[in-house]
Length: 170
Image (cartoon, rainbow, N blue to C red; front, side, top):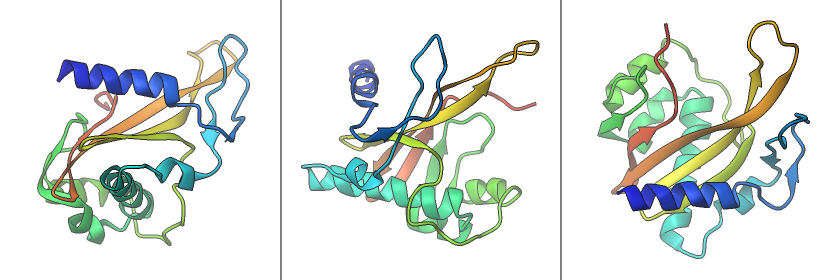
């Protein structure tokens, strides 16, 4: 398991700057993280199963997470969906109950709205990497970009498990 994670992390570090990326923001001491201009390129794979897994996660993100269409959760999530974000309970119905507090359904966009950097798929894993804008700690007057990731495990054509680097909210 450790070697799979290490390989995925290395892949993200090496392949997270796709050709045709657009400049997001200059940061001075570091290079700015950039979003991909063409998501269709990110969804491609020589392996049809990996392409299908990427598309599944991408569509879940667009339709359910960003679009707020929680009624589609059963199309994308296993009933026993496991959540590793410390703020969201496990289970498909728990996911729906949690996010229904914060979202309402809106028109579904053709592409993911968040600034998407990469989609990496290996076996039954898919990782979405996004640009994240961060403000300096209090007293400083600058901001910078970094990355945020969401990792999913696919089982029988549905999302069975999710990870991200979130910390407990107060």
